[in-house]
Image 1 (cartoon, protein in one colour):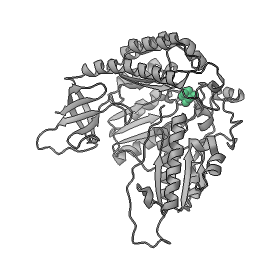
Image 2 (image 1 turned 180 degrees about the vertical axis):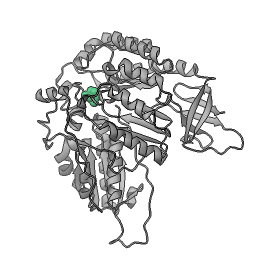
Image 3 (image 1 turned 90 degrees about the horizontal axis):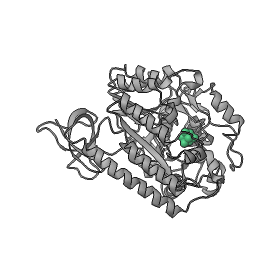
Image 4 (image 1 turned 30 degrees about the horizontal axis):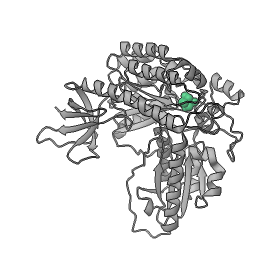
Length: 496
Ligand code: SF4
């Protein structure tokens, strides 16, 4: 998944009365990267508050600054390093006594971070979240709930491990042990999302062998959370006022395979759909050949399960997919898409592609363009291939120049822009449920919301320009709306 800047917004709980020596430590958190990283941030913030720390959204007021980093691709690494440097400057100028770096970048460059940025006082990898307390200098007020250490594994993961798939050899300073941490329903967590919506991480790690990706080395072998643990967390969140749950993991469609649960994701969705107070349940990051008929039928059968499938396909040319070690090809994908649309007629489809993979010929790229024209996705992201030291593709020949990669990426996005425009136009006049989320970032005169077609943070938006007279808009509340206008990606709606 593409990295997304998700700077955490937190309540600033002032404690001006207490003296410096006795007042709780104020911790400022910056969370970079994807929602999976955001959940890690929420867990660390939960542990810190349970131990008595205060959280602040003003890093200049913080005693401890934590940067939870992303290391997905070059640009994400660069953004992480820039943020750490910015915070190091703030530490030198301000009142912060500690700078802690957490997350994926730590798994990849553990020693180098501390060696090259002396302002960094401690690092916390993705498999040692509970160490945030020691790193931040916050003593646990009481014994922390013991983290759920995973004991299961999939035969695929075991086989890949034997083949050296998860090896970090050659990664300067990386600890040999792969992360095996997984939070559970008893782990404290402070939500950083608006109060009506929350992510639940149902699994961690990945066993797939995609040659462009280092996530398995960063996050470890695939492991699922216990079924009951996910349900218990969803029930708790619903009691707290959460109305939309988005299930995440590196690959949500493998959920339960490590404890031999067949159709685990479908079963989980079915059970979640039974939680009365939830309005929408959705999942992200499906692996194409794991989308089963049972999963699609489950989505179609329950109103609360969003008719929305996010399936990153990465490419459509069989030869490129073979080099990516993902298999399949455009024809098979088109059949899966056809099946999805047949089973769930109102389904919204999102995908993403990597453009300019080593050796991608003009013909292979054209195959991808033709596929995109034919598949008619509702949402699509395209990323230029980025070389990752440690990924198998790093050693491949025939790398494309950056300018050509960018040219192809833009061309693919241009094709999708036309498709999106057409598909959005077809929605004008139709009615949907919409969750109102706030005022528009562009102007206070417009409100903003999402429908079932819009997953949090990644898809276009719905601008609301007409609200019933005399009614007071309530953020986090669901309304019925009618689409009145369509742009390339965004929609305009009126509340009915
Ligand atoms: S499925 Fe492939 S791209 Fe996604 S996390 Fe796993 S190895 Fe990386």
